[in-house]
Image (cartoon, rainbow, N blue to C red):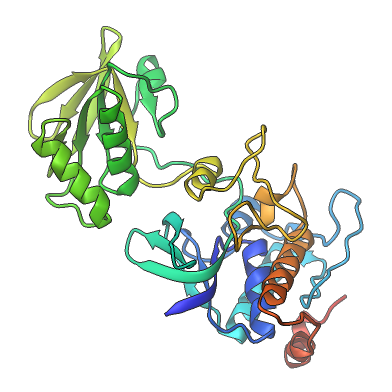
Amino acid sequence: MIYDIAIIGGGPGGIGTAIEAAVHGIDKVILIDKADNHSSTIRKFYKDNKKVDRDWKGQSLSVDGNIPFMDGTKESTLDFFDQLLDEEKIDTAFNTEVESVIKNEDGLFLITTSTQSYKAIAVVVTIGRMGKPNKPSYKIPASIKKFVNFNLDKCSSGEKILVVGGGNSAAEYAYDLADEENDITLVYRKAEFNRLNPHNEDVLRAYNGQERLRLRLNTDIESVESASGKIKVNFNDGYHTIYDRIIYAIGGTSPVDFLKKCDIELDENLKPVYDEHYRTSVHCLYVAGDIAFDTGGSIAAALNHGFHIVNSFLRRSGKIYSHTEKIEKFFENNPSFKQN
């Protein structure tokens, strides 16, 4: 299937885009989130019964689209979003982390996750600002933390580096660093790669065969420790090796890293560049939610992003955006959500 719109991130910006698309008959929409449900930031960081206001920091906000968001609590807001998504039967893929978004020569986006890939005409990135890389379960001593990376920052050349992970990011880190005259080992806990795209696996195998890097498969790390200003890595096969640096690529990402991988232009403050319709430098690639705010913003403002994005998408398709009665009918059928 080719989706009309693929939405990466299940917060208010993503939900707003999904609902606005659905009420206008854009039925090929998928919402992808690495958490086990939508609105993970609200679930995790809002206290129970916390008041949720439509206005934000004293600024009165109108809702531009078809979702008449109201004041409420953490619980009523989550219930409201649950009902909206259920009512429109939006396709969702939870517990699914997007690894890359690439625009192919045919104009379609290829969205790659750890388990499968999706194709879409347009993509909306609404991942928030709280994304961060996964960290290992064992302790990293403070004395060596400056030699531990979760991306390629601070890497140079001439170092002995261990890259940890079995996904596409780990593979790309490994062969990119090998190209910079570094001594690279890639360690992966499983016996075979099962998440790599064909290109990355081919490059890894070729570099390994040419001894431009080493692969240590079916091997895990038990602990790391300081060794005279370097990192001693203790493997589960009884061996240990000294490295100058470790780079972990075991899932998770910062918003900036992800935006760069999407080829989205960033300004001097590393914020995405977009127009009044939240269109980025990549045709049909949009941003919404927290990453489209200068500082912070309300749920209502994030929902408005969805309105503008769907409006832009429809106009590019030669259609006209309008308000519909579907949401009003939803409130008639669900009186417990009647607007205050």
